[in-house]
Amino acid sequence: MLKTIFVIHSEKDSDILSSLIMAYEGIRFKETDLYFDCVNIKNYANLGMDVGEDIKERIKNSDVVIAIITHNCKKSIWVNQEIGFALASKDRIIPVMERKVMKKGFGFIHSNIDSQLFNDDKIEFDRLNIEFSNRYGPMMKKPDIIQPQVGL
Image (cartoon, rainbow, N blue to C red; front, side):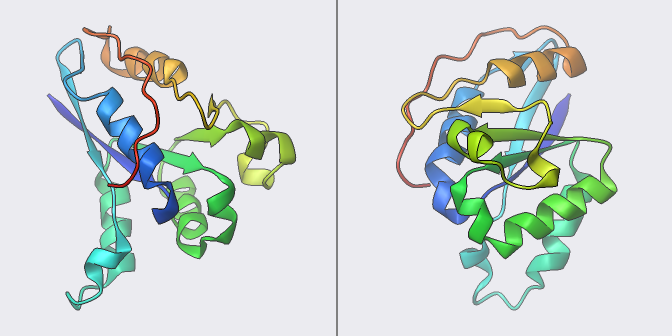
């Protein structure tokens, strides 16, 4: 069985997105494989497609939505709109939040929520492992601690 995970992120956080995808490459939860879907708005520039409608469809059709919350999100209108749409159309989104953003506060949507926290120098996904195991069954292989990768 394949489950689609839509990842909301700032284009400036492609290293974190890359680390997330690499951490779950080849991982199964019982009989469930995860597929990480995301959008790079730059890819739409010459296609003549309605980016907003495509993103909304992807969020609606996903099984789970993860939002990568960093200092870059504050400046991204797209990230905030995607989070708002996901909150309105899904029962829950899973935030993956930079610790220093959590300490500074970010807004009512991002406060007092059960988040996967990370530091710049070390990204672990233990809370996501628990979330996915609760939803889909036991993890067949534990992901390693991944150092942030540059670019995507």
